[in-house]
Length: 177
Image (cartoon, rainbow, N blue to C red; front, side):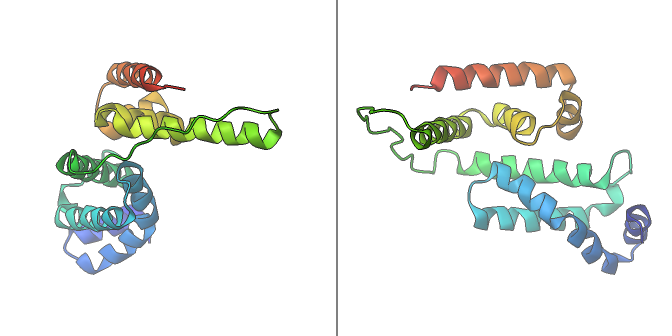
């Protein structure tokens, strides 16, 4: 059964078909949530909450966008809400790196250094405000276009561009190599 027919039947009261719809999207939604929530257990809980919210509100889905986009928006909102609730409750670990005296750089050393830089950039991205973090992750890690980001987040494309610019500025300021 195609997705549109499935959604119509569920909205009409045949809720037993929701499980099939959930199976089609659970991996996608878990990966979306995992981008915003660092802990796998919480990501699984939030993923369940996304489908519960979708189940309870399926009749509100108008079909103006793809169902996956609607689910993405729910996942994004719940993930951001969770992030805001736990903000400040986490203990920050010392992320300083021990200084070493470089010898001749080998290909393995260069790869190690590149991985350190990438790791530090990812840490910095986790430290910046959520609205910037979301845009930078969608653009660079999920390779979404400005328009796709604007549609997913329900914000104007110029706002996406400005938030991405500010996010990059914040990351550059925090890089301390």
